[in-house]
Image 1 (tube, rainbow, N blue to C red):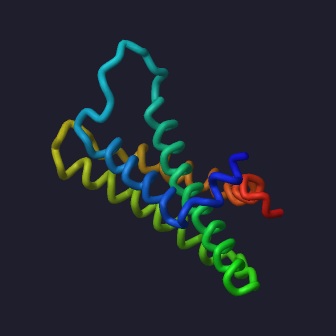
Image 2: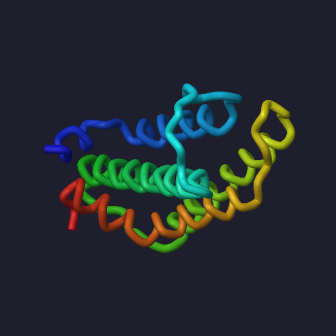
Length: 142
């Protein structure tokens, strides 16, 4: 059932939404309301890994959707290789580093933390390992 909705998406929409959400959550001074929920130490690192791993996953889904559209138009499936995945991973990592630098420069109560950037990289690497398989399963392309 999820495949029906995912395949109707225009390639690029999912990653654009995730891109803007991450931008809001990382650069807004107080993006979420205050709560009394206590988090474990370094929970923000896990959140960073999930956000940037999710960004990479959204790019993978969009790539698969683009491939599907191209196959429907030409009858040929584009070849998957290492280079596009590597470039997508580098772009997400660069985005994470840029956000950390912006947090330091903007002085809005957010700090530039190298450990957050390492968590971003970790999230991208872990997502790289599992996202192509999950995307193929969700879009029923095996």
